[in-house]
Amino acid sequence: MIFTIAFAEEREKGKMSAEVWYEKKLLGTLIIAILFAAFIFYLPTIVQYFRPARVVVPTYQYTEDLTVRFKIMDDTTGSLITSDVIPKFYTVGTNPFAYILTESPVAIGSYDSAEGAWTTVLDAGSYVLLVTDEAATKTKYPVKLTVTVPGTNDSERKVNLDPYMVHMVERATPSISTSIYAYNETSGAYDISALNINVTAYNKWLIEARITVSGLNKIIKAGRLYITQNTGLSAVQAYLDGAPTGVYLDDDSSDDGMSGYYIIFPDWQAGTHYVQIYLQKTGSPSSGTITMTLFEYYECLNPSLRFWQPETASINVVT
Image (cartoon, one colour):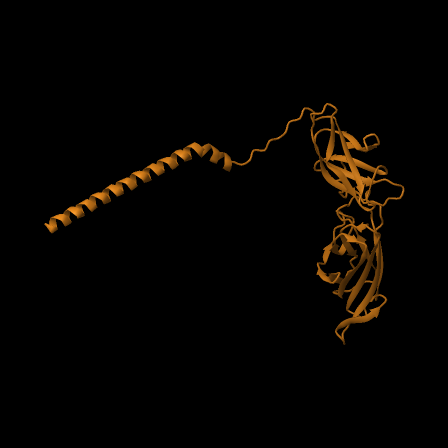
């Protein structure tokens, strides 16, 4: 009797387990079906979410013969420029700063006092803008930048240049003073003060240049400090404001009008900068003059735009 009851209980437990398993399986199948249906329902939204954003190019009614307005700021004085500059527009790809420029501008701007801005007439598109100082005494560096003329739906066909504000800056005044030190074989230091480079008495020299930049809010644009090459003398090391800097040799003047050893310097504001250049005799130097030239604003190589004279210093080589 006890055995029969126990067997019945075990059979009942087995039956209940099978029913529970079946119910769980049915529930799992139902959940999967619901998730699949939800996936199908939301699939277009998911695809749209991961699709790259479509770039909508605006269309304008007027894209030709637009009156383009812009302003020019003198960053040195913090005032708007309304005269004594000329803005010229070139086709994209033109470099007005090139050493040799053959292209002509497609438009030239003029100041419109009624608009309170500089204006010109252009079609929508991108251009290269060149602004130059045309004052009797020039003070502002030329500026070059890529600009965009947008289209418009305004029947007056007036648009603003992008960027609307063009910035110019005035050139500072540099000066160079130099000191020469010969290498002392006894002390192992460059401690022999000299008036020139005597290639008979010594084999190594240190040229120290002190470059003073004057002018509040004015700058000297980044460029190169050159020293002319003398056969038998090599520039082997240099420092700029206490930090090591590369010494390079430019032996082709056809691309920029300059040649010799040079180092690169950044934009300089008012202050004093120091350059140390180490020279070494590597052959048979000839007597003559080594010229140190501050060739600023190296980006602008067009001679007709370089209204300033490079600052120079001379060092004599004697035998």
